[in-house]
Image 1 (cartoon, rainbow, N blue to C red):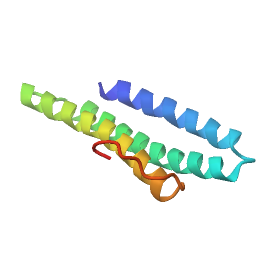
Image 2 (cartoon, rainbow, N blue to C red):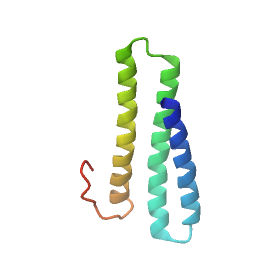
Image 3 (cartoon, one colour):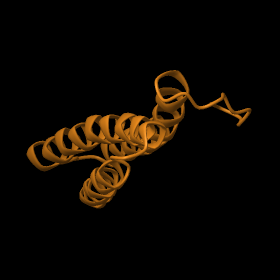
Length: 101
């Protein structure tokens, strides 16, 4: 699961870099794309660290596997929340009324 998440964040990062490049002539879009790319970069790095930790310290018990999976699920949820918060605070988007954000 950690490897899959790392692959997904890498794909998101490539997408965000392309988004920033395509938005180079529109300041509002570029600002939103840039904020999103920074959040994605941070979470891609966190995902890589977790992937390395899972590889270096494999789970020896079932409860350890559960904890690693909970960490990964929290990372995915944290990413969505961080994207929304960063774009609202730094990108100029109006706040949403989504539950949990």
